[in-house]
Length: 73
Image (tube, rainbow, N blue to C red; front, side, top):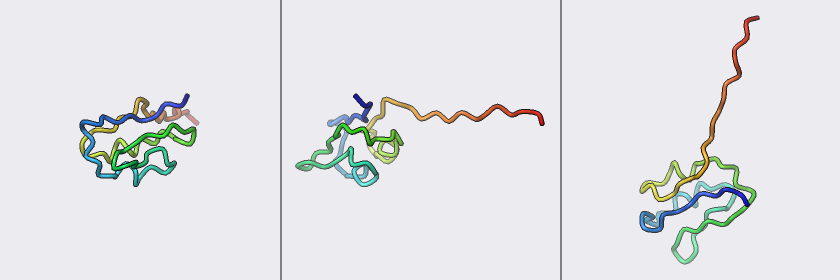
């Protein structure tokens, strides 16, 4: 099972911003309700969470970019 974003339906204002930025089609609008579709195509970009104006969308994962240790040449 792939980790997917989750939606707090009480906070969601159904603006559709998350739907418009989801490049993999995991977030869709069904009968004016934002719905998460489990897919292995989700690359955990967290863009959906970032654009949500009400904080209704949360990702249970965090993107961490580690820098390579600097070596003395």
